[in-house]
Image (cartoon, helix red, strand yellow):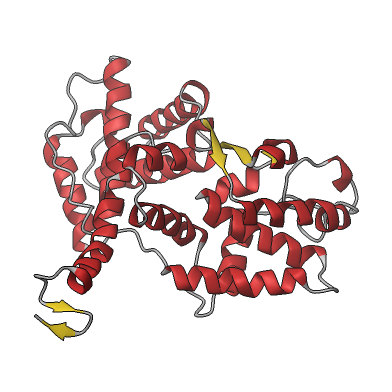
Length: 311
């Protein structure tokens, strides 16, 4: 990459980490997207500071031509908008090439969630293993993680970063650090609290016996007493599902979808999930709409079918 583009991306990375306070994973994701755009420009002997609206449009068109999902294209455009906003603020460019570039429709790709019966089945299976007389720390830990992912709608990174002192079982709540190190209080149900209590009492002490592990404050530890990685949690959740298609993200979406289906208002769900913009939360109204249509079809006297009987 040209030194001009490389230096610019490096400085922007420092801005994201220091001034915006974004986490390393977020900074890396923004960096990858911007690097892709910079490489696209360099193939036509262009620089980031000289990009035009046509360059941005053709870059997005190329992504769509390679079957990149609309959600990913929208994320890359959002990253470009933030980057050029910074350049304008720093007076390094005179115009924003992302201005008036329409974001692709992303809400047609609805978040995937699991049926309540699927989630209950998974939690019951891991619960049986955790309640067994010979249950070890691993079984207790895995069940507690799954209960917490579903009960609190936590992101996988929030699970990995959770500390022992962040959980107040007597108050049935946890203090969670989300994107941008923003903190929020998440209420927890009785079953999640019970699973965490048993893990803290009988599971975590055994896992914390590794070298130096006794000093670690992370809630969930590996068999070697180390903090769990995001990838490990993903693999564990997938392995606990009946069809191998579950994920921490699906459990988070399932938590929100099931809350909306049972009558929760969007503002409450927004606060619960830690969404900065309620527009992000509004997608769950579309997800829950399918459930609402089915209820209407089965129970409304003027619906086409009611309890399997034509009206």
